[in-house]
Each structure stands twice: as C-alpha cells, then as structure tokens.
Length: 350
Image (tube, rainbow, N blue to C red):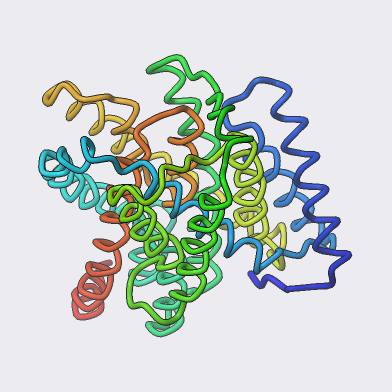
C-alpha cells in the first residue's frame, strides 16, 4: 500500500475527481456525503490502478487544520468539565479491551490469521504504528495495512448511518458570519497553529503530533482569549474531501485479489468492534445521562481525524470526541507491544 507524491497534474486530477465524487454523493443528502464520496471514488480509482496521487503536503495541512478545529472547541466552560470525563474514559478502557478481544478471537478462529497478525489487525487504533510493528514482529504487513485501512473506511460509512438511527442528523450550517469575518489576526493564529503541527511531525514523541500539537496551541489561544476564530463550513467541506482522499488513497497499490482476501476478515472484525462500541456507548449514556451520539463517535473504532470531522459536521461535541480518540490511540500504542510480547511467548494454540 504505497502512496506516491506524483506530479502536479496527477495530484490535481485526484483532487478534482475526489471533489466531484464528494459533490455527487452530497446531493443525495447522505450524512458526510463529501467525505464518503471522495473516499469511495479515490479508493475505486486506486483499485483500478488509475494514477491516483495523494497531495501529501496538503494532507498534512488538513490534519493540522483538524487539530486547530479541535482546539477551537475548548472553552472555559468545557475545560471546567474535563474532570467529569474520567468516567467515560474509564469505560473506554474497558471497551477497548473487549473490542480487541472479540476482534482477536474472530480473526484467529474464523479468519485463521496468525497470532501476531491477528493481534495487530484487532487493535482498534494506530494504523501507521500497527503497520510498522507488523514489519518488526514478522506479521503479514499487507494484511495489517489492508484491515486497518478497511477499518477506518467502513467506520466512515457505517457510523453516520448508525447515528442517524439514534438521532436526526442535520448537516452543520457552520458559522456564516465567520466565513467572511475572519480577520487578518485570525488568519495569523490559524497559520501559527498549522505551522506548529507541520513542525511537530517527526520531532514530537506523541501519537498524531500533527493533529495534537495544533489542538493544544489552538486551545491555549482560545482559552487565553487571544483569538476566538471558528472554522467556516466551507472549509470543513474541503477537509472532508481531503480526508476521503487520504483514506481512499491507502488502497493505492493494493490488488483487488488482496483486498478481497482481507475484506471478509475486516468486515467481521469491524462489525464486531462497532457493535461493541455502539452498545457500550448506549449503555454508558443511559447510566450517566450523557449524549449518546457523542459517545458513539467517541467510542467508535474509526480514526481520530475522521471521527472528529464527523462530530464537527453534525455540530457534536468535537472536543469530547477528539480527547477520547487521542486517549484511544495512546492506549493502543501502549498496549500493542505488551500484548504482542505475551502472544509471542504464549504457546501456539491448536
């Protein structure tokens, strides 16, 4: 699953194709149509061996922009409520354990994956890190990459539909006043946040530093009263298109045969994990009296950027969702090596 920087023409055609796919799907009224259409078109073109090329630098800017949007959602009132989130975070630890357990069992017993490969595929988070671990531990790197790419893609397709069964989703109208009212000072701080994310990549030892660092900078600026910028709805549409390109572009270089070989296993594990996440979210929401939609997004096994932009697009609690997904990714990165060492030492089960 290699992504190539490619020529300017190939990148431009990829963006145009993805934008057209997003626009067409958005006309149907499907939630997150821009992102889903872009992802489906880009993935399809990749599998057809068309010259799909990711705009690598622009994707980094988009990831940093997601971080600054997460940070902009932090207010003094919200910051004061952070102390109450420890209960939902504790439940997330439990749910992650269950999601990993059911995924690992299904991949071992049903899909017949090797133990280490099954463990890395079943970990609900950290696609890049799981692929790197698969290479180091001798797992099937292609299977790990494809299953995790499908995990995120299927979560994008399924989670909005499931949320639609819980509550009515209205596309976010954004902030029209902000769309034309961003001052030069606002743009300056936006640029600072994005630059901080770009500089953090490869230099800061955090999961997804290109998202987390801009989030921290943006949160500090907002809480400190230096700015109150909000991101216009038109920019969130652009971000949706680029997220679709990023997810769909992961299938570049993947043969249809390899995809089909891993598809059944991916659908099985993702279905089980989403069922656990949704059931857990509804249970916790009932026990604590909190918003079930926010918890479904917070507990889902999708990506940090993807679930955050879904929360933003339906005017959900972006900070709540983002913090829980950052916690999920960090926990997955901590637990993966420990679980692998246990699985490797464990006698092979017949």
